[in-house]
Image (cartoon, rainbow, N blue to C red):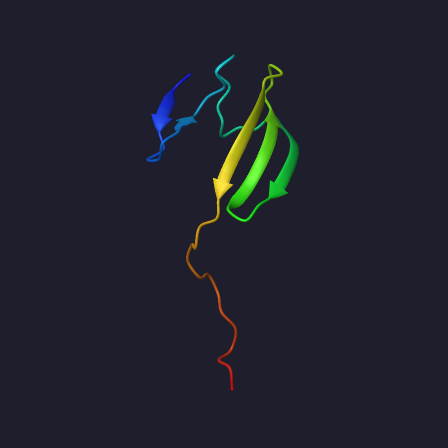
Length: 70
């Protein structure tokens, strides 16, 4: 396991704590739920370990826009 600080009070885990499978390579998404703060995903690793992941909403950048309003 390679924990890294996420800048908040918690710990962000970058690999499966059981087998080391990389977090970036999700084996199976069991369910995904929209919340007021972001998206909660329940995932299963290749070894069977279940993980709960949270992706906060981010303002992001505007990629394209429509014509100006008249």
